[in-house]
Amino acid sequence: MIATGTDVRPIECLIFLRMVRSRAYFMQMYGRGTRIISGDEMQAVTSDAPPKDHFVLVDAVGVTDEEMLMDVAPTLNRKRSVSLPELLQQIAFAGTADEDTVATLASRLGRLQRKLTEADQADLRELCGYTLPELTGILLDALDADRIMHRARQHPLAQAESETETGKDGEEGELPQEIIEEAAEALRQEAMGAFRGDAPDKLFAKLAELAQRTVITYDEHNADELLTAVYDPQATERAQQTISDFRAFIEAHKDQITALRLIYNQQYDQQTLSFAALRELADAISQPPHNWTTETLWRAYQKIGQAPTRPVSDLSIMTNLVALVRHTLRPADATLEPYPELVQARYEAWLVEQAQAGNAFTAEQRWWLDEMARAIGHNWHVTPRDLQAGAFAQRGGLFKARDVLGADWQALINEMNEALVIL
Image (tube, rainbow, N blue to C red; front, side):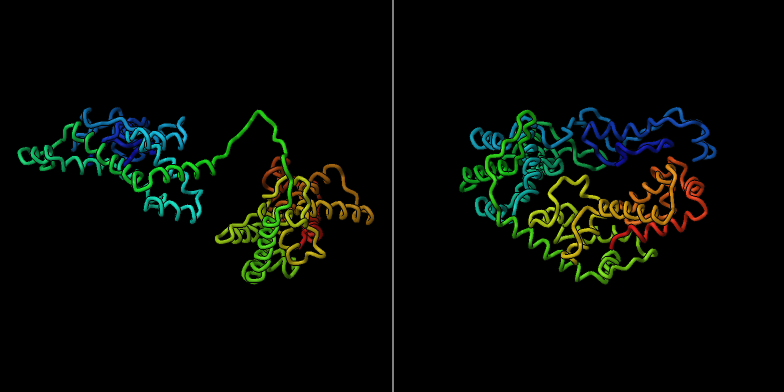
């Protein structure tokens, strides 16, 4: 299907060999042939082609028959202003089963199912014999155009007509719109039967309860007021378990994951010390069953009082993983602080050492050194290639750095990496 998003300007001919019942889809496909292209560009594709001043549409199945095209809603969630509890009330008390209601219910249940636990799904199966994904599937099947047409062709009038009339090229003839609508209504009513079992009131009440439980209400006008502040032992236990699992993960993978091996052995290795190595570690901990991030691990340490509670500018910075691993392995001698802050503290100490050794830096040199220290804090270390991107590139890149820092620029970068990288 060549629809929206396809921009192949040399297209000169569109051939329809399959029915398209959606007017919106048809217009998207039709529009692919209207793309303008210059004569030179056209001849670059087909050397003997004349300039494209029109395109040809070959309709082998009757798509261009206006009566066959239907306007379809672009989304399932068609009753946006109606809440799920209100929608369920309409279905329960009024027996509503129109297309918009069924489509909206399928949309709402589809979103709700991602937030339910296995226990919730078991409760629903006990009430109606289905889980939420199965209920959603029943509703979507009732809206499927192919299923509707199949049901319509089983109508007695449709079968009688098919015995006396054959459509184009041996295909079945067109059906009256009334038969199609009747078939669609029947499928929707059958789908709603899944919600009208032995205990429909309990099912609707359960769905409304689940929906209310997952609702997040945003109040943009009133300030929050703290009502109670109590100790939550379960949260602390969960945090302790997270940390224990993280420590076990490190021990199990310390030889397989480069970053863990370097931090575990406190080994500075410029050949393997790279942001890619850190990315490998981040990807590994984010996999099921743990699904950890730097934020979740950091929050766990905050829960047990081993991480600063002050606001941290960006916990998602990947180098914070280094601080987390260091503290997990050596809690007694590895203070848990944001990695960029640890590097900045070392950088300031390094500058003092340089001054004591008689090495003075100009203001321009300090800019480059400050930025390289910041890069180490965010990227684990800095390389000459890093000096060709970002803020470095705006100041002249690698060539400018070499000019400002002097002949020993490479040695200076290596010295800063060795002095500031914390493992």
